[in-house]
Image (cartoon, rainbow, N blue to C red; front, side, top):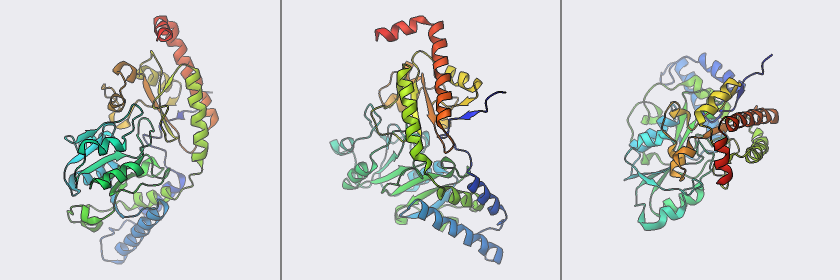
Length: 366
């Protein structure tokens, strides 16, 4: 009997938690529009506002929660309607940020993918009123940005900070920021729901309609209830994730692989690994045939033939960047899963080395 499939792509989306699924199903019974004044509408409104309070408490949110369809929409709202002057973004930001601010100036990063306070402070890069978008955790590498220090430097320069916390919410404390984007499906909630946290509503241009006039459209109450349940879920499994990632890192090193941003602080649930001499596309096919789901870069750019802009910004050569895959953990990932992945990783590498011995020679000479 074949082994069940092994899912190691939680950074793309993580399976719906049972408590979030149950809450979403309960929300389907509250079918009325929360904006309606009748009894059914008032009941829906009460459930909506209760969920808003629960999410704020669970994630320790300091600011106003505006529900959106996800982090992508939250980012677009902040960058298009946030008050202020120019837009600047980190060079390794998610594609959602790059699409929302295609003409924004880029803040360079170190070889480990870190935007340093010095990059912000030097040369008068930031002017008063500028809006700067920086990820809390990179979705391809797991690199954690020092947002406390970066935020302090941005505030000292008179700028505003948009923190993309899609990957870190529920796993790390939210940073002090003017805008924060969240996505429920990254923490075990349903897809199609997220939020924009706004420190001061005066910083955002209203458009009328729902969500206090800042995001029109009937709220997705069932998904919001699922979001609240996921935000409240026990995250004790993260301690185990650190041990699992250390186990995987050690195996990759021993097998001749390369860990992306090995020297940087990284979220324990996300890592990038290079298998020298084997294209990521080949690896993905082999892993998938073996019943293991991983990815190469962001799920939002899957199918693209372009090399990762994240790795390019970190100084990676294109050929090397094309050999990197992403592995990401979830609540159910265990040591046996890591061992199964490592066994397949070694098999793929051994097969490639046997077929292309010149690759092995180049690596020994490097």
